[in-house]
Image (cartoon, rainbow, N blue to C red; front, side, top):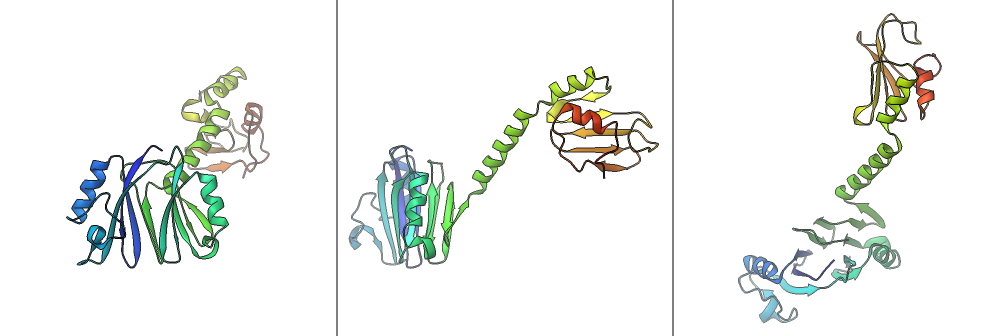
Length: 242
């Protein structure tokens, strides 16, 4: 994360940080919130930073994470901002009063529009990596989805449906489709291990196997199927179907 700029808004209930790529963006935001905003004014000087009408303290500043992330933490009615990578941030929170009664927001990189709000019973943000509350890390939805996609990518790389389709055709199976990471094999009536007078289509995604018939019949394998040979056996023998 390169040098970034932020505007902080401190009320009696919470502190909010809004982050920007340039000083100009931060200054424009500050002035839009409070016409007397001074980007680099003295944060402890009422003349520079205090909005008496709204009872809000404003501060503008820059910070250079030097390639690390940013941790915003709340403890004992104050909010702190510091540079830390993911591991350092978690270690700090586990070894402090945050373990039981603090809260925090961690950003691993700059994202346009990112912000964080912390206070007494308040934790909110956008573009964060995870939050910390009651001694527990809560990953953002974006990070969870990233993990899901990485897992799906791993499964797809492990299971090559097109190659498996060719191997099934070499074994003598017809009407085999191996597109989109999944195998389907259409069979004629009575070409199934169930003794059912219907044409079934067998499906395999590298682990799960199921079969569907035009009359609505549906069965599935109770055991994981991980090889072409195992899938071929499923289509010919009755073991493991339910």
